[in-house]
Image 1 (cartoon, protein in one colour):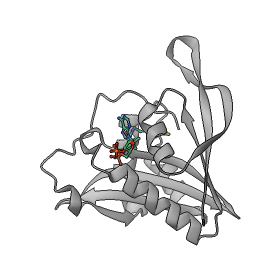
Image 2 (cartoon, helix red, strand yellow):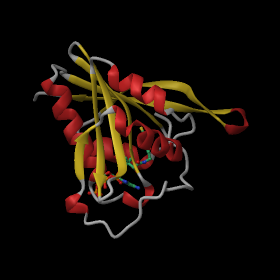
Image 3 (cartoon, protein in one colour):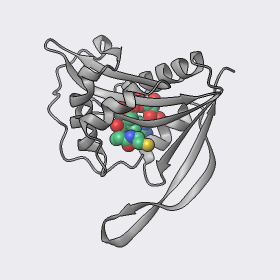
Length: 171
Ligand SMILES: CC(C)(COP(=O)(O)OP(=O)(O)OC[C@H]1O[C@@H](n2cnc3c(N)ncnc32)[C@H](O)[C@@H]1OP(=O)(O)O)[C@@H](O)C(=O)NCCC(=O)NCCS
């Protein structure tokens, strides 16, 4: 997952009671909101159709963080389980919703769901410069298990390493 700097928070504002943010199973009806949010965070955005297709995968485990009436989606996380391994494909919280514990809540819930689906390890890739995500993952029991040199292409012809991380599940 390669995150970009975040100019656009995609609308969800403040004034939210963070304790009332719900985590819901992601369904195709959330895909447009997930895609819009994804595009604010990542330099290779996933469109609605791509997200619907990922949600339809039998090993898919996906959640959205939402609040308000009408409901606003302010975060998402999507993992895929295959046999006893799971991979976290993406996780993101809208810029104005960050640092309220929602990334942690999403990650905890995804870990539990992947474990219930039979996974014993959760893997992910993260850009070496993504200090916020690295801190989140370290806090949740992930440790570096490998490195992919120059994995993420960056503007100007540069490239950045991906750190592969693994978290044991079911312990
Ligand atoms: C990474 C991300 C999901 C964290 O979401 P969040 O809701 O702000 O995270 P939380 O509030 O639950 O924070 C949990 C822990 O993560 C770490 N953390 C989160 N943001 C951080 C930051 N900006 N700097 C340092 N540590 C940070 C801290 O350890 C924090 O614990 P603390 O609050 O007790 O210090 C969010 O910054 C994001 O969406 N980033 C853009 C997308 C992205 O990079 N996704 C990951 C791709 S691999």
